[in-house]
Length: 451
Image (tube, rainbow, N blue to C red):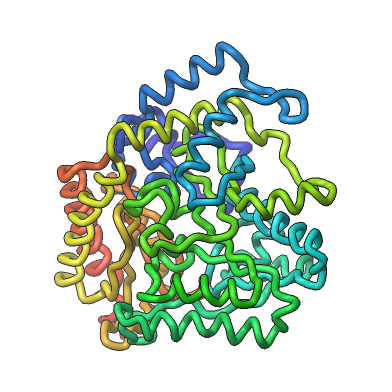
C-alpha cells in the first residue's frame, strides 16, 4: 500500500486506509489499483451499488436546474416526488414525510415529533422512550440516550437522560426456539412489564429495529414478537417507532423490514439505503393524525437546513426507481438465500462460528469460543477487528461490531449491494473461507496453544 500522506482529517481513531480511486457496481479500487468487493455496502448504505448511471444522470439533470432551495422559501418538485413515492411505500395512513440528512437526524426527528404529539394531546407527562439493550439508534445526544451500547454512550451519560431499556430478543443466546411464538411473547412481555414499572402515563414511545443493525448484527426477531409489541404499545397508548435506518431500503427483501410481519408503526425512520450513498439523505415518516395534531398546536419545533434538498431528493427518487426497475428486492431475496446457505456451510466447517442470521442481503455471523455455550472468544483477541483486517487485505470489505453490549463477542455483517449475483456470492464466500482459515490458524489456535 502506498504510504498515505499526512491528513488533517480525524474520525474515530488513527486508523489509515488506502486512498479510494473509484467505485463501480459492487467493486471499489484504491490508487494502487487493488480491487475490493464491497461486502458490507459501506455501512449497509450502497444498496444499489456504486456509480449507477441512471442515478448519476438524474443528479446531473437536477444540478443544471438547482442544487439548493430552502424549504421556507420554496417547494421543490424532487422533494414532492420523493415524498409521494415514500408515502406510497409506507404502511397505510403514514402519508407524512419529513426529510433529513442521515439516520441520527431521522431518529432525533421521530422522538421529537412523538413528544410534541403528546403535548398536543394534553399528555405532557409522557416523555420516556423505551429501547433495547443492546441497540444503536444514532450519535446525537437524543438518539444516543436511546442507544444500548455503552462504549459509545457511557462518556456522555452526564450530558443526557438515558432512557429505559429492555433486553433485545436474542433467543439464540438464551437457547430458546426463535420459531416458537411463545419465545417472541416472552421477550415482548418484557416491554409491558417495563411500561408498568415506569408508569404507563409517563411512557411516550418504544423504538425498535425490526431487524437488528450494528449492535445485534442482523438479529431477526422471534416469531410473534413484532405483532405482540404492536399490541402492547396500542394497549398503553405508547407510540411505536420503527428504526429502519439500516433495515429499510429493500435489502431484507421488503422495502421496510417490518413488512415481513405485516406490522405498522406510528412513526418510522429511514436513511442509509434510502439514497444508497449517492447523497446524505434520510426521512421520518409518520401517521397523518400525529402530524396534524402537532401542526394544529403551533407547528413542529424542529428542522434542518438541508431538509428536502432538491439534489438529494432527485437522487433519492432515482434510487427508488432503480430498486423497482431492476427488481432488486427480489434479487436480494434470491441471492441472499444463496449467501446465507454459504455462510451456514462455513459454519459447518468452522467451529468458531456460533450463529448465522438475517434476512435477504442483510446477514451476519457471530464468532464464539464454544458453540454449545456460545461463550464469546476472549476479548483480547480483538476478533472483530482482526478478521475484518484479514478480509480487507484479501480484497473483501465486511463490517463488525461487538455483540455482547459492545465489550465482548464478535459479529460480522455481510451485506453486499442488492445488485449482487451468484458469482459475487461465490467470491465473498471464497474470501471469507480463506480469511477464517487464516484467522483461526494465526490467532485462535496460537492462543489455545499458549494456554
